[in-house]
Amino acid sequence: MDIISAKNYILDTARLIVPAERIVLYEVDDRLQPFGHISSATNEYWGGLYSKFVALDPYHPRYFARLNESVFGTTPGFGVDAESQEYVDGFRKVLGIKHKAEVFLRDAEGSIRAGLRYVRLNGEREFTAEEMARLSKMQPMFANLWCTALVHNKEGQILTGLTVREREVLDLLLSGYPNQDISRLLAIALPTVKNHVKAILAKTGYANRSELLSALYRAGHVLREPR
Image (cartoon, rainbow, N blue to C red; front, side, top):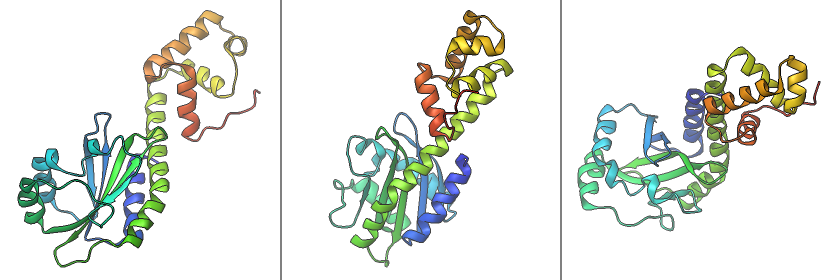
């Protein structure tokens, strides 16, 4: 599943799990900055206004990067530190936001890679403990789906940048062949195989072949028996 399909699937499923006036899905970069927001309700004013207050957002990913929990909100027992008055007056009150629930999607190492934000407006009820429990139960599924999509996206970038010969070498690496066998099967010198492996790692940004192969296996590749 690609990034766009994963976003739409998660957003559509999130609506079914817990209803809310607005649900926003956003990505998180390596500097813990949110970006790429998509919303269940189109509101350009919301997006433009949020960009002015993102630094004051009490649910900003940077505050939760080292925590073990992944579900927070205004529901008692799921709260965060008090919001600044500037944020409340300039953002929440302007948009009529009363209740919030935040679900962080983490990778296998625990890093936040995306987030889901549920919003209910003035006059609507608070998120219940049972609804928060539902979000906690679904969080691993959403996180796995999202991180798998990220790896698939990375895989696409990998294959796009490789030459035909480099793809052949990578395919044999995925089949579990050592360099010596790859040299024999492709009828090329062993130093040439090593150079191809180095080029593949340089283009993909992985430190070694173990990291590269692990990423591709997580993307859905299965270690095949040598042919």
